Every structure is written in structure tokens, then in C-alpha cells.
Length: 295
Picture 1 (cartoon, rainbow, N blue to C red):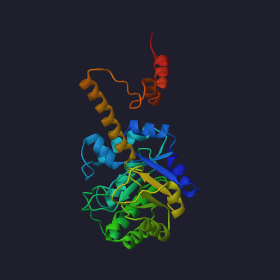
Picture 2 (cartoon, helix red, strand yellow; picture 1 turned 60 degrees about the horizontal axis):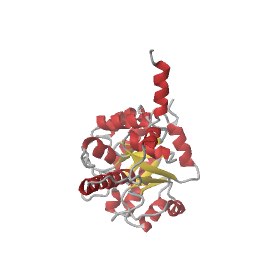
Picture 3 (tube, one colour; picture 1 turned 90 degrees about the vertical axis):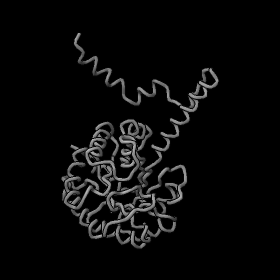
Picture 4 (cartoon, rainbow, N blue to C red; picture 1 turned 90 degrees about the horizontal axis):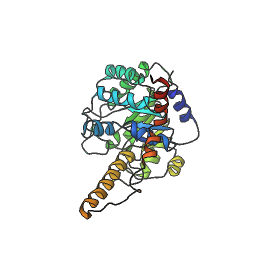
């Protein structure tokens, strides 16, 4: 039995703020878990970028998303929220989508109110569907879940129409049965405070890179966000951006050894072999091999 939904719902009702770095494959999920995080979001952008090599503009299909989500959920104990983009269609489609994602073993699912094909919430040119259409999607999602604790997270990108529109939509989505709401790309601390104060349920915010500012949402600490009233902090870009930076630094060092024609040791840029194997739980598989080996 999948008890992740119940565990995450209990965390949402607790006093502590919940930090959710993004994961997009087994590797990133294992790193996040090894660092002590209890929960994470599966990044649709990360899946599109890593699996297909394309940007977050709606190209990642449902089958690819489900396959990636299922694999991640099977390789970690993290309490995961999957990214279902806009639900891949209308309310009827959302009903099917929720059924399929619940089977993957995640704790919940996020659905957003952008027009399809969607795009990254921090890019220009995005549009939102009517409030009533998104409300119908949330009602369908609530009806579709087998476990009443399965988290329905509703994301609105309506801040492009003003903070009041984002607040009104968030409250409508909560009334329809959403357990958690996120207004993406809020542009100021004042907007975050106003949104949190006027929304009648748990609020998530997207801090993106977490350790690097963006031209959109301001970068704030968990302590400040908790004081404002935020319940969940999404770090949707910290892991993928750090992975890119890490690979670039290591490969730059490698190219320097080519230019200098001398070996350069850079243990500050790569983990050692033992740490890599420990992360992948190699001993477990070695024991299984020994147990079932035919001599």
C-alpha cells in the first residue's frame, strides 16, 4: 500500500515548512534523499529537458511523463508530487490522468491553469484558461483519486492578470477540492504576502534556483517565507541548474588537462567511486547476487 499521500498530508497539517527540491530521474532523486530531504517535486521541465532534450513548452507527453514518474517513485522513499502540466486536455482527461499518476506511487499531482501547449511559468507569452474550466479539472481530479489523501496541488499562472486574479482563482481551486495551491511567478514580496494572507488554504511558492536570483519571483529564505505563511517551498531549478554547472566545471577542467598535457587532480569537482556506489546502494545488489547465484 502506498502511504506517501497520508504522510505528505500529515506534513501539510504540521507546523514545519516543507522544502521540495526538484528531481527528474533516479540519480537526482537519490541525491536529494541522501541529503536528508523528505519530500520533492518531480519537475516536468526537468523530465522534458533530460529525457527529450527539449524546453518546457508542452512537448513532453503523458506516456513519457508517467514512465519517468514511475521510475523515480520506485527508486526512492521521497514524498513526491508529480507534474501533470495542464492535465493533457479537459476535465475528462484529467480524470484519467489522475488515475494513472496515482498508480505510480507518488504522493500527489500538480495541475496548472495554463492554456495548452503550456510553457515554463517564468517565460513570457503564457495564457490561462477560464477559472470555471480549471475548477472542473480539479473536481474531476478529486473524484478520480482512489486514496482521499492523494494530494491535488493546483497551480495558477494568473498573476499575469494581477495578484487579485491569482488570489480569486486559488480560493476557487481550494473550494473545488485542491489540497494545496501555488501561484507561480509572483513578482514581489508584497505579492507573496498578499497572496498567502488572502488564500484560505496551504500555499506553495516557487523559489526556482534557491541560491540564485531570477528576474521574476524574489529570492527569500525559508524562515522569511514561513513567517509570511507559506507552507511549501518548491525549488524547481536548483538541482538541474547545479547539475549543468557541475558538468561544465568538470569538463572544463578536463579540457585544461588536454591543453596543459598534464594530469590535474580535481576532487573538489567529482565525488569518488565509493560515494557513487554508496548512493546507488551497490551493496544491496551485491548481496542479492550472492544470495541467488548458481555455483
